[in-house]
Image (spheres, rainbow, N blue to C red):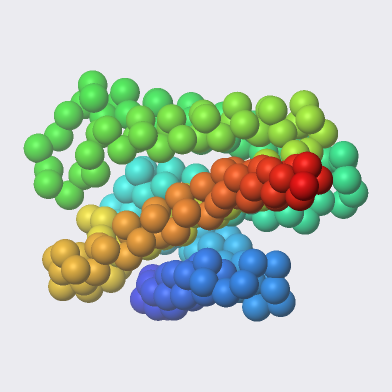
Length: 237
């Protein structure tokens, strides 16, 4: 497969990632459509990671070190989010679950090393990514690693905590995927990156993620409290 075919696969996979991710957000949670869209999102995202690594091997000047770190972080997030839902049994974790914090630690460490290297070897080239991005992705990976350790200590999260873990990781991965066409060096046409209207999609993903997490953590608790209050009032009557 030559570089042009890799770019074509990159673009197709990028479209599939975004469409399947948005579909999973919009359809009824837990439905067959949601599961299929989620599986498509995870599968296409992993395949996208393989394509990006292949592009980095064939054209090292086209894919920056930040791009590789960015892709590794996304793949880690979607795989760990998928594992959260697809556990073999309750109160059990798989070997892949055990490996996740080590993967996150490697990504966090690589981000720090790349970031400090960029600081100590500054360049005036406009094509290089911002140095702060290395530390940003490193911080996300480190926080995710700490949450992975907590997940393992509890032998797998249960209830709404399990769903929140799934939602925030998938949401971050989708937000990053949506932002990829606007990043410098993307294979997408320049007019897409230059159009500020299209960047609204990133904000919509963030808003939807916050909505679902809030609903999981607070809305259901408030509804339960209201039911208890109503039952108490009826009992007193």
